[in-house]
Length: 248
Image 1 (cartoon, rainbow, N blue to C red):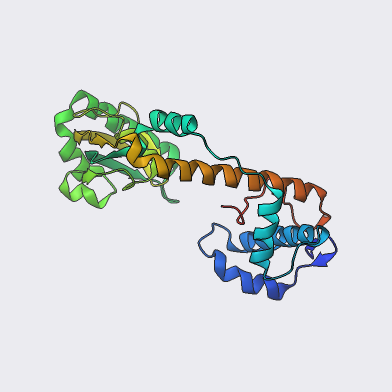
Image 2 (cartoon, helix red, strand yellow):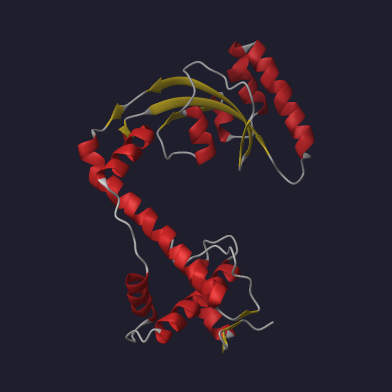
């Protein structure tokens, strides 16, 4: 089915030119088509408002600057963000982590894998000294060769769901439940940790203000684009609630 935005049909050749820009997306074709559709909506609005012509990027920038009010974060907001997220401004924080991975694969029934992982966890909680031997015997991670040891990790070294948990644990603690990530089911133990040092607010104030300003800008752009999508005549594609590649 043809994709038509306000009477303008997006050609296959346009999609082919756009597609290479989105190869990292989970669905590159959908992302490319969505980008073209949203771009057309913005360009049509710029034309309706009589804004100066130029490259697509320049016209869209002029439109967003003219039509979208972006609030500037004040000192209180920046300090509140600093106080609520100290982990973002701590340097030198490290944890040494051991884990056992039960990898989810198409060939292994998930429920059977979960039962095995849960039983292994209960055995380890009862006999934590066997962790290294059990990791070597059953873990699906290359770290099994060294008893499940992942070495010292800092923030950003692992996937977010793993990081959040291990940095909240105490040294010597085995997590009393399975930790699920995109890689599978983990049994996790924190061997040691170094708490690190919180940077003073004055040292990070500018970066906090920039981050909050960027978040405000993106939220405002998304809201504005949702308004334009609601007004547009759209055929062949669903844009309500679509991931917006233009304002990320």
